[in-house]
Amino acid sequence: MKRFTDWFSLEGKKAIVTGGTRGLGYGMAEGLSRAGADVVIIGTTKKAWESAEKLEQAAGRPVRAVVGDLSVEQDTPAIYEAAREALGGRADILVNCAGIQYRCRAEDFPLEQWNRILALNLSAVFRMSQLAARDMLERGWGRIINVASMTSFFGSEMIPAYAASKGGVAQLTKACSNEWAARGVTVNAIAPGYMETKLTSDMKEKNPAQYAEVTGRIPMHRWGTAEDLQGITVFLAGDASAYITGAVIPVDGGYLGK
Ligand SMILES: NC(=O)c1ccc[n+]([C@@H]2O[C@H](COP(=O)([O-])OP(=O)(O)OC[C@H]3O[C@@H](n4cnc5c(N)ncnc54)[C@H](O)[C@@H]3O)[C@@H](O)[C@H]2O)c1
Image (cartoon, rainbow, N blue to C red; front, side):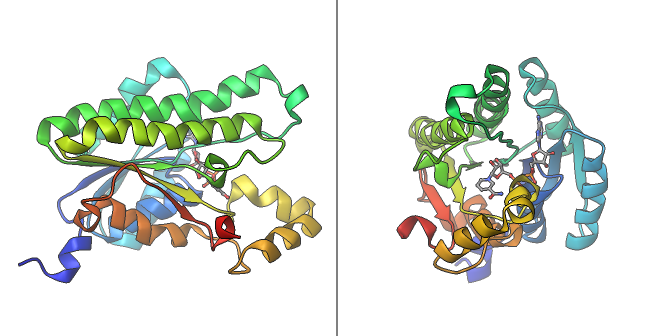
């Protein structure tokens, strides 16, 4: 019989985390690594190597990094292959976390930004999932964890491309799950609420009144942290979540329920 802790152990598993250089991806990579997985993070700059070193020290096991731009469609297969190679030729877990946003009124929103955001936040998620799933389906076991958003549920304002991309991530999660679930690969998404990272630091620094208003609206009265995503990531990556697939799970301090 399985011990309780075995449900959450990732010993022997190999994981790729996109956007693992900093922010939420870094925290998710740390969680996976601390649960026993071999981890490779993917980031756009050489800072990814520094982050891998820091992660190694935190988790006490090797963490590797691959540098590449996932918004460049033709580069994605080589980036995936490099990550897979760094894991010894196998990936069991894929976390699609890399994401960007840009704020502007919808009527003025530059098409260039629209394309840039959709390329990374949605198309790269599909491409990486497709590449990883081909491996996972062959072995009959895999976990794909996408990072969605509360804007997977509502449209917000000033971020039309971001909201469209995250709505797409939620639907893509279900679409891929429907095809792969019976073959051992679960596909789920985490929808973080307001989280303290570089992506959202503008509001705190430039608009403290709005920051205070948002904080007051969160039932837990605090913004989330990268650490707040570690438990759910380990849960979705392991055997404890075996019958959960196609789900978009809010981790938002209660915000969506209000
Ligand atoms: N911070 C929040 O409040 C919040 C809320 C909901 C969802 N999210 C989502 O969480 C994810 C991580 O966001 P974050 O807040 O940690 O942001 P962040 O800006 O701190 O980190 C983004 C990460 O993505 C990587 N990245 C950016 N462009 C890339 C590219 N072209 N190719 C490869 N990697 C690239 C960066 O290297 C970085 O590690 C994003 O998908 C974001 O949409 C964040």
